[in-house]
Amino acid sequence: MAGVKSLQPRLISSFLGNNSIRSTQPLIHLFRFDLGRRHVSMQLSRTFSGLTDLLFNRRKRLRPGNVSPRRPVPGHITKPPYVDSLQAPGISSGLEVHDKKGIECMRASGILAARVRDYAGTLVKPGVTTDEIDEAVHNMIIENGAYPSPLGYGGFPKSVCTSVNECICHGIPDSRPLEDGDIINIDVTVYLNGYHGDTSATFFCGNVDLKAKKLVEVTKESLDKAISICGPGVEYKKIGKVIHDLADKHKYGVVRQFVGHGVGSVFHADPVVLHFRNNEAGRMVLNQTFTIEPMLTIGSRNPIMWDDNWTVVTEDASLSAQFEHTILITKDGAEILTKC
Image (tube, rainbow, N blue to C red; front, side):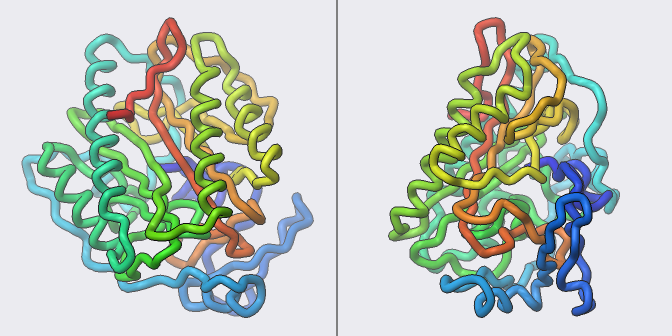
């Protein structure tokens, strides 16, 4: 689940930056101006999201469906401390460096997250709703003695994030059936034995056009290339350069408001991992764990938040794709923990 650079205080763990993205219902606030970037962005509610069908986009714009009630979790499942609070805890300061036991726990949570992610991908077919995917993910996680980390995080109502087409991230599963030609990112995080494993992948639904396929393939390649340069002492900023260079080569946008993050006994922690070129300080440390989760777009990289305070879409309705792994820094480089 992506960290934020800066949208709203309750989402500080998922966003990063100085973007005036707000969720607000009055029509007068449908457009907002960011003084720092001299940029006007459109603020779309779930009600008004169809307006851009006429203004910006020939492809049918993503519209919200009905959200079912929160699914119960058995009492014997250990829950993260934030579950009973509607306030997201934000990014915890300080690196978490694991001992041998911590590493084994991270491997276990990572493997389970990867298994759930891959299983969820097999369910992606035309006519299947994202709520049905959420139900399957929820059940598989609790059957394995773990807690679905997104459920209750800052009030998030579901157990997985399902981001379809122009949805950049944090899509809420609902009653909308997937359609032939859709792409969907499924973002899974599990809390097992006190440790979070966090991963996502973008899947094809039916017959996907070549432009969408290329975007997904390049996004996956950007993650793989970024992981390949990781190791003790490597500067975090090199991750952003590798991803941004590849995106530029293919003329894709790199979303800047959402970041990778430290993950372990805490869902979101230092370091903040930027996916674009930057000059931030910091170097990787042996036995730390963090996520890398680039989001690339065919068109605008600027995000708009729906009035559910979670769903974030591209301002021009262009497609967005994302992949994510949790990695462990080892003496030889990086070990991908969220890999079956």
